[in-house]
Image 1 (cartoon, rainbow, N blue to C red):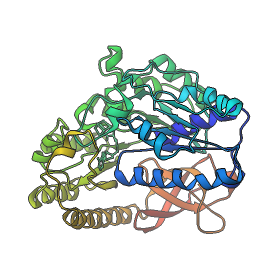
Image 2: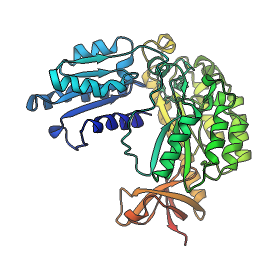
Image 3: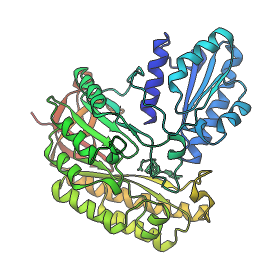
Image 4: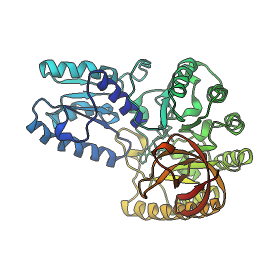
Length: 427
Ligand code: SAH
Ligand code: SF4
């Protein structure tokens, strides 16, 4: 989501004549896109913004700007303006469309702009230029904001309520991206499964996927994120029956303990979640299922964590993002009793080890199989090698060169190493 927003900011800056450069020393503008989902993201952003001051010493015309979730937190904009007097522009999450205006203002008068619109339901802007940087993949927002208020999460406070783009606007952009030659489109939303509810649609996401599945061409579609409470059999049926929609579902569970799920306000139980996994696997046995999992949430006891480990062992995710809970000011969980850091640390290590072992075992089962892979890039290591993901989301390395990028290949897996697969193109 943030990467795509940076692409929009880059599109706006390019429309003003700016181009990308690779060193801060030669930049005319440095724009920080911030995230506040966890404390370490915020700390890193603050560190990087602070470090940018020196570039202004050598280049007084340099414009420094900050955008993204961090600025939108309660009174964060003013605090930031005070802490970083050398920052020229501070924009809230609803104010990206004002970036061009603010840059012009600073250029013309060196006047500082701090714009943070607190509205929770701002209108969707359809006309923002996008400078895409993600190679063969293009991101496509189908909705913005979130209504779920999981008790640990800052997103609904800094991104406002759910707003869906109309199916017409989504399809218009989708078709344009296919015409432009993108081979993989990733649909984005905090909870794509509730797409269209605010437009009065029932089962809007399944209907949207059906429209997308009807588009002809050699491409694939992914989507994220699915909230388990809104995922259903209709959505799974469209994915299962469409050649172009990847059998790959990111279905964050967060915890395997009913007590913790309730405290998190996730609106599903462990049993319900397991029934979804079963339903998905019965329709798509080869579906790659991934998750977000958190440890150290308030009140998490050893037995709750044991439930999480047990669930991880039962589901056998093909990948998982694992996090230590980080209290976010203004969210309900921040006022609950906190788990000691050393306990969280022990748990995250055990969780990561467990998940890594599963991934390694799953990787082994791919040896000898043929996977359809979209070549995305040159491999970071190895001359004459390229890499790309399989439909189920696994990274595969195989022989190729820059001309292979953007093409689909059937690749026979000959070796696996942790999460990585290595193969040979099947003629
Ligand atoms: N909307 C998505 C993901 C949003 S944020 C969803 O509901 O799944 C991505 C992940 O960050 C979350 O799934 C959660 O696991 C993690 N996360 C969110 N807030 C957090 C916090 N305060 N501390 C640690 N991890 C957090
Ligand atoms: Fe945060 Fe929950 Fe919304 Fe995801 S669904 S963005 S975790 S509040």
